[in-house]
Length: 50
Image 1: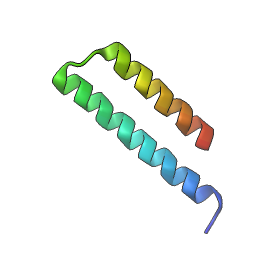
Image 2: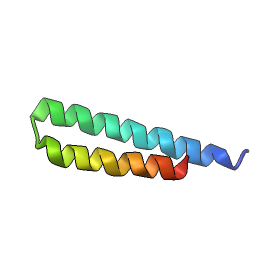
Image 3: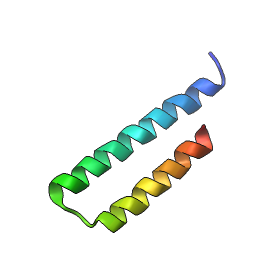
């Protein structure tokens, strides 16, 4: 198994979580600023793992 594989898997999981958080925010009309901050943190984590 390649060393980069776990990082790729984690990146996909982070993206999936970010997508779900965005959907939840739209459905329940939560504070978009807080959601944007969470998505930004997740995106940063994805870039770190990639």
